[in-house]
Amino acid sequence: QVQLVESGGGLVQTGGSLRLSCAASGRTISSYIMGWFRQAPGKEREFVTAISWSGASTYYADFVKGRFTISRDNAKNTVYLRMNSLKPEDTAVYYCAASWISSVQAMDVRNTDYWGQGTQVTVSS
Image (cartoon, rainbow, N blue to C red; front, top):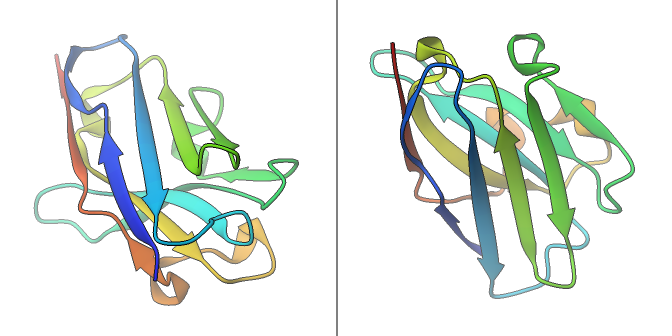
């Protein structure tokens, strides 16, 4: 079992930045593809980004390319999401996820094995 705990969410103005962290416990995440999803009120949970076991490969949804950066530190069993140039439409609960899959492009809601509890990100206009 893997337990994931997100932190770092909050309220920020348009154009601002936040860094989310996801701390894992229970077992090492070094063999998992890790990712972030988000869910806005009244909408389905959607994929944001994923990172490979080594960190060498990353994959982003089009709506965050160039603004968000995912990274991981396997020694600390932690994954990060740096979010720059935030927009009001980025407002959502952000979830950390771990998947036992073979490629970052394959990560989606259906094949995620573990979820964190989520952290709220609110971007004011």
